[in-house]
Image 1: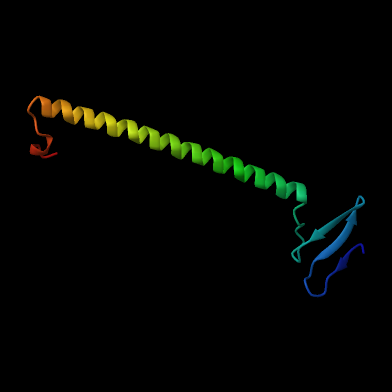
Image 2: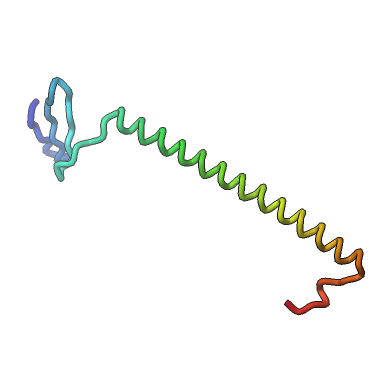
Length: 87
């Protein structure tokens, strides 16, 4: 089986250090199960980090909205209408 090339797929099968290694037609090796598993784990970690960043951004936005409403209420309490000013 060493060096056998599939006539239909063009994939090369080789036995390297008692492990079967498959190569794409361009000579690039297929990723091993371990490599694919590590890539999946990294993608999941990145997705979790992005979810946490988005959650933090949403919380910061909520804080700013609350702060803005409080400031608007303070202005209104002093008789100042912010919509009267052209910013």
